[in-house]
Image 1: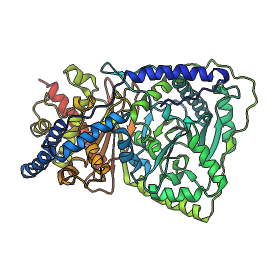
Image 2 (image 1 turned 90 degrees about the vertical axis):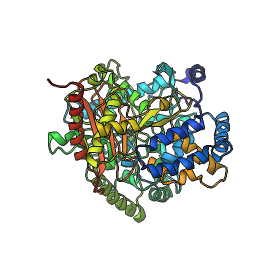
Image 3 (image 1 turned 180 degrees about the horizontal axis):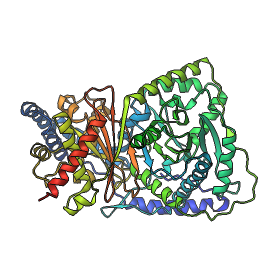
Image 4 (image 1 turned 180 degrees about the vertical axis):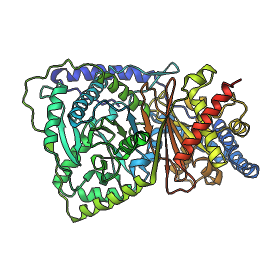
Length: 603
């Protein structure tokens, strides 16, 4: 599906046809995602369990897996169902994955689902410069959107394979909507009259800001800056009732509050403006600076959740797909909701923004009178006020429970493993597994993210670690050539996790009881990812990605390897006595140094 939003009168239909032809031609070169062979996935599943299970339990699971995969077994029947689904659908797993991983989850979006990217601090420390930079950022994002609309976005390749681009139009004017049992994603850019506004939030107050002139042209930076000044003049005081906090609640709780909120027509109109906006801009107050050492951690946390109800959390609408954050102290970043798109398309957008922001503004502002930005008002009755108070309490509990540790490892960067013909990503994964083992005296099920955009409508797959060989290395710590994980199958569309999920959901689709293989305790262990990892997608800046752990007793570790240094962010929950982000960070630093000594022994 192609969604266009060209604003220039008579040429709109022609450009849409041209772009549509370009996209259809492009999509035809991206193959459908294959359903991996059943035997291959089951063998891969058993290999993934080898370092995690005692021999007796592994033997029990082998019997269950063998029974599931025999020629006339249940697995073969379900495999045929998946292959039929693949023939009838654009992508056999993506819709199921989004539904299962995101939309059916009832956990709050901040920390548990939203991902944050904290970018290098800009060189300013006052509100005037904040608005100047915010104006340029808005212009940069609109420029990127124009390239999508006109089909000018360059084709991306990975391992010489073109990547599917269909997620890009969905980034804009999209929003997650809460529901009682599951959420859904609304894409308002599909309509014939696509939205032409963004939402600006300052001091917990929301404003509708039109960013296109009446003739369809994009507003210039100076026009946008003038409008931001107007917004600032209307939002001197912090709003007593931070409506955005409601979106941080447990999804069922927020769904009920959402229905109460929308009973009022004024509230309906205001919520609709937020949901339909191209994206949101959050103008934050400065990050609380306790020490230089902890500033990077606080900066990342600020983008991730706003820092709490006494800080900037009221400046968020956590359901929104794209929320750009610009602080008065030069801190800035992006918070994005992953149900619409995971990291790589967002990173491409940010690369464009960063490049655009370094160029001088040469466009002259037309002498056109601009309408006043529209402040969005809400009617808050006693029930809604109570909902807001509960949401504030729950969000502060969640934020206080999350430990965020961001640090820059400066001893070496990705050049070191490259000098020894090693993949930097795999090298860092070895270090993470070894550090985890040193802290907890055990290995754990860990996952890294691999894109599946080399296939039509593809999303992500897990790269699992450790392998049996990886465990041997961790225990012996004497052979750096051992692979700690298996990358290639996932990058070729033959990862095991989405396939196993598909087989389970196919059984449910056909009205069967859940197969034994998925009721086995081994499957629960294999999918209890205590180590959730993510590499910052291709990006040459000192940015830091940050999100919460997948499980209560786990960690999330993000990293951004540069030539001579590596940025890390580690999160863990304080309520779990077993995990400690600072301890893992300290051990990871030491482990990285020990690996360096092994590769470059001193005489």
